[in-house]
Length: 202
Image (tube, rainbow, N blue to C red; front, side, top):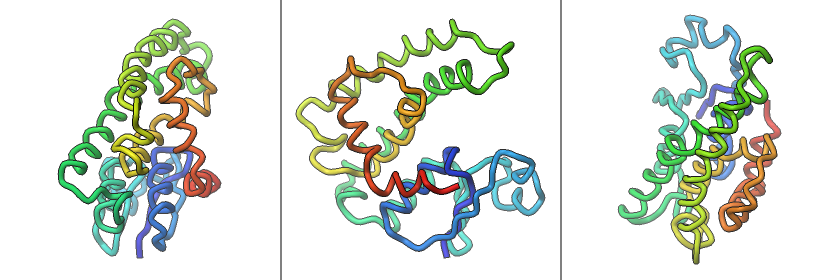
């Protein structure tokens, strides 16, 4: 049995999305950000004390992108898990790109506008992050010229991983209309039924 630990309101949400896309049976344990992750029984699963973590019949994997790439490779078929080694490389590339180029800016905006106590927020830091976000969005928008999805015509784990990072854009209602191809692609990905099912979980 596959067991996923973590709330859908965390990076575990992208793993729930992947599991829903794959259609495999799994158990969801909605461990949150409270002291649950510091309990000895959970630290045996993820010694970092973070979510998500995956237990696949005794194989433990943590880090959300690693979980998703593992799940797609083990349980997915083309096109979700691409058929060529070259496209595997591009799936890794875009997944890590989402984490390194996009997520830091979105987290800075999120923290400074929504999460931090009022006294600790910096609107200037949020504005700086919005400005910095334009560079990777331009890269994405230009890459999607002539493509429906990141690797071509089909939705793959690369799209899921990058779109899952960008879900904060929808949550914070950021305007990305200046990047129309990226905006249209994001809406296609985020609107997938599997993502809707994942988002409805705890």
